Length: 174
Image 1 (cartoon, rainbow, N blue to C red):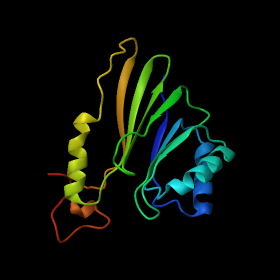
Image 2 (image 1 turned 90 degrees about the horizontal axis):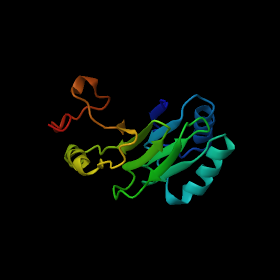
Image 3 (image 1 turned 180 degrees about the vertical axis):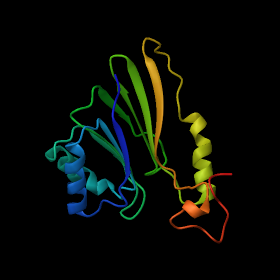
Image 4 (image 1 turned 30 degrees about the vertical axis):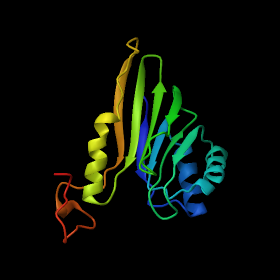
């Protein structure tokens, strides 16, 4: 059995019309799990946004908030999802990382959704923390799959960067 995952950078979802249109569009697609980055959600938005996700036909959801003008990651589970999502919001990276596991009959999918820092130094530090991020699995009755999605905020070549930095050379993480 497989799961259908989509990952999107919301580029800020503060506008009610924008996030309602997005929620409606996503809930009516054949995706099982939606991974959003750069939501710009705050703790004060969560209840309203969760209700709007459900009104548009969505299922479970979780948010790791940033500020009203930066960061924020989310998982939105649709009604189509073939397994039960278990969300983990325990990572201290404020608005940068969120995890979930989806268990199906034949596998457990461990999905990590990140929104990496713009700063090359901070981004490198975040990437270096990944070795502690993925767990060892003791349940060998099913297959385990680690899936890393998100916005890594880096390009391998400045020519591909929408806003290249001319003052520093921080392409990728070196």
